[in-house]
Amino acid sequence: MGASDAVLQLVCAALVLAVPLGLLTVLPPTRGRRTAAAVAGLVGGAASLTVDALLSAPVDGPGRVLDAALAAAIAASVAALASMRLGSLGGAVFAAIWSILVYQPVFAAVVGSVPSLVQTVFGAVDYAGVLATHVAAAASLIVLHALPVPPREISARPQAVGLRRALIATALVTLGASAWMVGVERVVNAASGRILGNAVVGLLLGALIWTLIERIAGRPGTPSGLVAGTVLAWAAVGLGVAFLSPMALGASVVIGVAGGAAIVVRARAGTDIGRRGAIAVIVATAIGGVILALLADGFGMAATGSTALVAGQLGALLAVCLGAAGSGLLCWAAAVGTIVVHERARGGSAAP
Image (cartoon, rainbow, N blue to C red):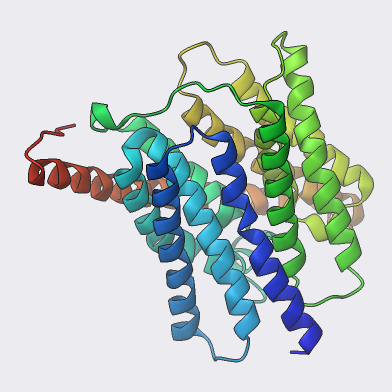
């Protein structure tokens, strides 16, 4: 690879780490949660480097660093979210095991080769690995929220987030996600400008759409919703960010974020927002996949007249959901088991 490509990937690797920093900015601030995110991130990054070393020739060091940075960022994000239900220890264990058991296989299936495994098996497109970064994480977190945990470990509490913090968090997530979507191309080429433009515009538009959905629902806008809208927009456009015309980009973000946001915004007080948020991510990804299949430049239904890609996109999403949900059960068992052992060692009780 040329020197410019190496610089691109190393810079993007550093910027990708802004994603968990953004999420931690709007979550209830605790030292334990930050520690859990850091530990899980280290495990995720190490797992990525190990898998790359075992399965590929050592010819793309900067590319490996970028992949490892993304793995670390996503594992840290999952740890931060899982700790809302499992506490810092359980969140770290859940995310660390998830990064090895779930993330790495799915990432390899969607980004690890050309053509990718999901393209070969399902005929699906996942340009930026959203099936790994969003769908696999969301499906496992849904399982986590559906299963019992030690009551004392449930730490999710409503928290008012100021507009300034929310704007900083939105900027951090947008920066990290956009860096990954540009860096995954591996080189600077004619598509790079379009990818960057689609990523930045799409993610910021997603933040705006979430706010509008709240207003339409008759609820005051919540600053933290800006970050949620950005994450949903990433899910909706990441599948085909390089192949979306302005019209397709707008449709993916508006419909995808609106569909996902409605699931959360319409929830009653006391509802498990974490579970609804995870479902919203999957809904946004599914909508983005369908719109990509219909409107993608050159190979969407509008260009080919074929509906096969629609079935392929939804089939790949369903397969990842089922696999991640089953593996999420194992991650939950390991996390709860660790909590129980830890509490017993301290002379306490943590029976779920």
